[in-house]
Image (cartoon, rainbow, N blue to C red; front, side, top):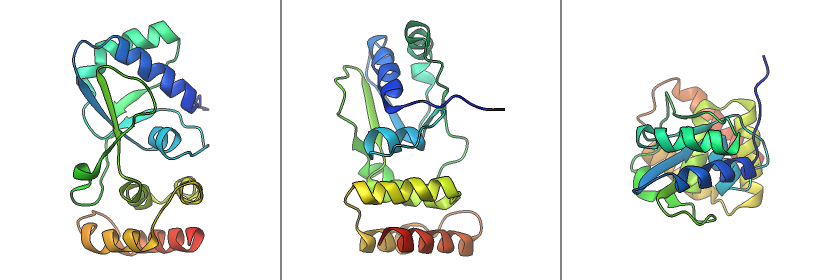
Length: 172
């Protein structure tokens, strides 16, 4: 089974259409591939829009936007997502589109990389490597946040440490 992949322009088109159907401010915290494409210059296409927060307030506008644009891009709150302590305090507003009511935010780049490192699939590591090449990423800050703010992650800690080591070797 193959899934359709979407570009950053597809995401921008859909988000602008969603915004046009909103009557009040609604926040959307992007994580995953859509955030990588829009905010961090990644080129790897993705098949959906994952949100850290609930998308319930967007449902009506989202359905209208899909009909209007013909873009059937799945949008949902991620079933499982975790990041460094207090990463929500460091969210960055995505301002490369003129939006009236939709407030799009992404994790700060170091937080985003650590969030992608948790899963550590090969395509995640490739996207992180591309992000590191195209953006200012500080090795010391990644390591510091990992050591200070990632001790709560559920799962195999050794695997997570190996994922981070792979990122550090690929990027620095």
